Image (cartoon, rainbow, N blue to C red; front, side, top):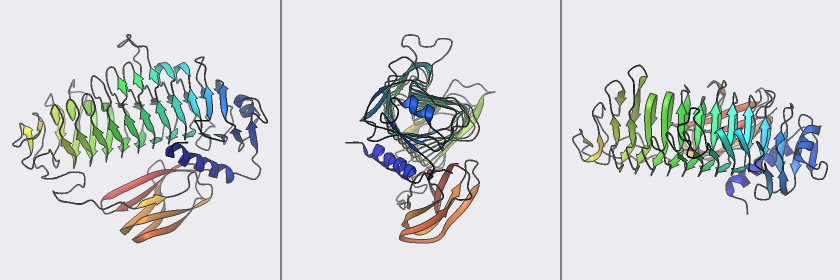
Length: 472
């Protein structure tokens, strides 16, 4: 039986096919073409390649054609594309390939390449959804997926058992990155959403994810990944606008920053759980951090650590309304005075405040940390002890959307529902008023270009988002 994650995304892909243009064709593999490559090479824009259960030993080169749908009939447990360790399993190199291109419902395995063992996207930006990407290898970067100059959307996949680099060559001149996913370069925002990213390995940096471009990373489980040096779960490098929202980052291992390493750029963390990592929950090498309403707990070293900084590289950190408790080292530690660290209004596990240089017996703080005032109860609601968070409304919608969709929002109390494009511009205001249970809301997308949009619902000071692909 398929996992709930796959079934959800397979149904969405099937709905997309059903809503396709009347002129679009369906090419069946192996019924019409013996291989997936043959089917892709014969396809026209708008066509669907529908693949029957089986194992297909192929190293696929995507054609220079937009708006193709590569989907399986029976899901990833029944439909396998095997790279036979002779190259990348699926390679996409065309700039005409955008998120109107869909790859859904496959196990993608046994790829081996210098960059991108499972999937390699260079200036291509497909929607990759509902797949299992496993047991792939890259010599330098992106064991599971390598994306350069790409606004890829990686949604609802299981990415596991992939690796980057050769063990025992740790610290070589060219460092290895991104056991699971490697993202670099490009304009706009890439999206990594609702994936299970687990048990991936990188010899040097980014066991789960290496992120070197602006990315929205939301709703993922990033667990039990490992890297040799930095960023067992996530290694963030120089990107100026990456957002981590509502992720579980747990059980990851690395020498520094077992959960997350920040090395340059600007990283925003909201509503994440960074727990039980073998090392620091978050290590700041340098850069700018804004964290809010998140938990840093039960990590085997510091909840958040700062070190190896130079004055010229230092930026600053702002951490508020977070739970910082039960870490084996410090709650927050900084090794120098150059780095400005505002950690006021957090819960340290004791109403008397943090320990260390602080006055209480909660998780310890070091010098160079501004911690007063602190919260006397859980910080996740952004309030004082005893606050009970209000349940955020839920959003239900088909995805992708062709020309119109009916959204269902469920909740209570005043709320506002609106849509943003990738630049952060509001393109539609769909609802403003008082919710009383389930309410349908019509969304006309006929005047929108193809691409990724974010449905946002605001209630009080709380924000919830989900990404939706609009297809023309």
